[in-house]
Length: 342
Image (cartoon, rainbow, N blue to C red; front, side, top):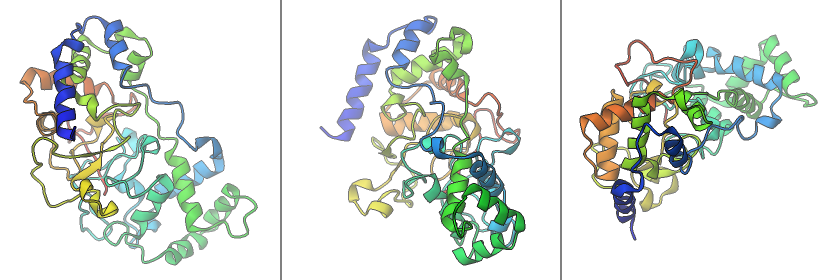
């Protein structure tokens, strides 16, 4: 049985009445939801080894613009976490140190350490591996090499002190590996908490009736075929355009990493946690509106043409997965917001 048959079969099964429960019944809805999703864990893998000194150093490095060639960019430039931001810059693609834009939308750094891999094509296995890339990328932060990065950090007495505190006992603690480890330690603190998890943990009133209807529709339509687990995504790879081809055929996706023809147009399934904060959407940032993204995903991946009412309630539910301490930027349209980075 091929992927198309599996998707169609799952969609037919879900729509046939398996989930024919009323959104007004929170207990039953919760039970069905917990079959395919789960609350976000209390901490990310690897966090048990992180020290306060490493986290503090990583936070400073995350906001450090001297890690870019002309002193204009930091990790936070594309993955903004300050002022309640959603871990992105809310642009289709991100401008680098000298103004040239990358080819893909910058994904959120929030909860990123729970993902199966980093970047849209999964080319980095973990947060530390990911942190090394943008600094030396000629379009992004554009530093010429690791030696220049270390020279800048080594010339700062505070950094020399903080690296020594974060990595005690090392003869030369200011290394590129340690820089990446520290940034990863900070990023492992970026765990979000939302009302959907409150609902999953037993709080019936955590979701409004409209949001519960949206959750019911989300389950019934078959969205959890790809978007499942604690992050409601982020745990695997799928072809964009399973049942109908996606309009952008330029970016070939994961095949560029694996060289396997089966990975053409395959990308990491994005997490839907904080999705209302992280538009525009998809790997190329082509959809500014969350409603538009929902509608196209249903068409491309599930072969379903959703009604306006279906889209409305699903978007309402997706908003319930926004971190309670963060808000969509004022420049974003209703249901939209940023995402980014290759």
